[in-house]
Image 1 (cartoon, helix red, strand yellow):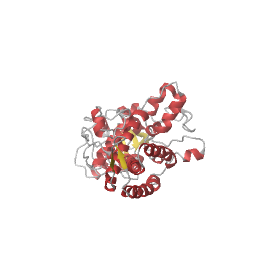
Image 2 (cartoon, one colour; image 1 turned 90 degrees about the vertical axis):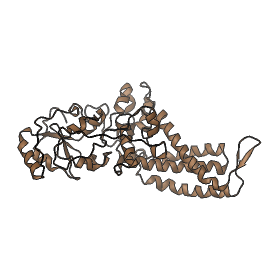
Image 3 (tube, helix red, strand yellow; image 1 turned 45 degrees about the vertical axis):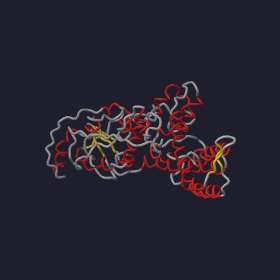
Image 4 (cartoon, helix red, strand yellow; image 1 turned 180 degrees about the horizontal axis):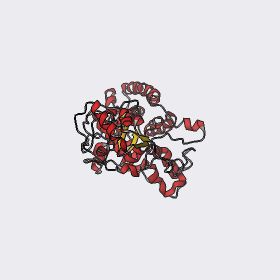
Length: 402
């Protein structure tokens, strides 16, 4: 909101009425936020926010035990809609009584959250012009690019002026399995048939080889799946999270197109999976490499396992951004861990690979993570603390999403 415009004022009673999935408001100090659009993105599930709707969440945000990151606070600032009228405290008390609240509100003043010091994207003052495609702008940011790209926003990004090129950067999630799974099924049958002929051999040396039996296909397939998991981790950690040279316009632009745009707008649902058209080039290259190094039956079996691993990976990645896993489940922890990667530890590489990242010293509690079991709608949160959770898992395909 521009500083020259007076903020809109809301009564406590008006704010308290917005506690539904269709309209969810929260307070931070005296600042009012409409977080309706954020409900489905919340890593702890929408219920955690809904139970706090219409009330002040400063204590939960500021901790203890977990103080939310600066990026998480900046993200919340995008939903700022106005201020609460401090002269209307009686209306708030009346609303609480009507909801059956038996607790006596004791808070007289709420300490201003650090959120009030953050600012949402201003189209007039931001480093880029959001009204124009970003691909050709980011290279000019120079040494400011790294800090800018790691300040996530909740808004769609346009990369190219051309509608054709822009359309090829966007993909609905279901296109990935629709395009690649038929190929996985066909190649799996083909590989099994080739191995069944009994002519596929693995050469240990130029003079010694062993026959690869058809019943080895499931093992080779799974080896390909885990090969993809390791390969993706290396690409994400050592390529996608390299800091491009500040003086190189084209490397900055390339970094933004490959991965930076995902960190800038992590909830842009049209760019959470890899477009099949572009992916086919990379996938084709890996196929050719494996076929040059290994025999048809062995190389293709590894390839199809890796391809299946990629499809599963892309689907899990999408789910971690937009799904609502059951509290306490492995995916629930993975989702919180992945959000940690986007908001706090962007440089930690593939920060959903729990085991590998723990070895690097990355903590596993994330912004907007599980704040504990909150009271029913209408109960004040002042003075309460909500424990975060730490999640541990094994290094596997399920923990290899960017």
